[in-house]
Image (cartoon, rainbow, N blue to C red):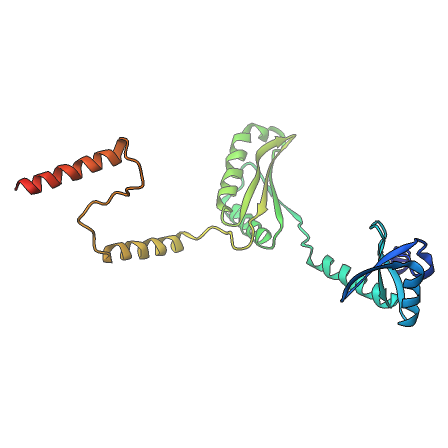
Length: 233
């Protein structure tokens, strides 16, 4: 059925009933009468396949129709394979979830986000536990903060009936936040380079920046005063 649907998607040979067509190929394109295009197809022992019927004139190719259908199916399959299927994974909490259960669910949420899935976390309030909705909101905000390196918040906690939801989307590859250890190492390297760089004893002011007051003006006055004091001595 699928093959028949694809076959009927294109007009071929005598099914093409327009006055002229544009034939495209590796050597460019050529507008010719449809009768002449059919003759060219017969000479080359291929088919005249209309690939863009809405163009003016319609665009055709001289190609074996079976080969053409195979290429189209292969291209469609490749495009489908490239499409990333994003699933929404659910994480359920109670308003008084203990620490061990929290860490267990946090671990799973990290895995879901790293796999490219979205996470819908919610706190379910059973009976009179709705009185602890503020506690549930704090729990979800902590959850979002602990997953900051792996996902971004799509919507803040919101109460819908007896459930309070929080939605998280995975961060793009390469955009994950650096760990604290990595940031500390980079800061240490920068501090080390600064300590090795000799400090200049003169005050430099960019002449291209207008000095109309403020900190730059005070800096210039201080520099002029220091120069006069040096000359006096």
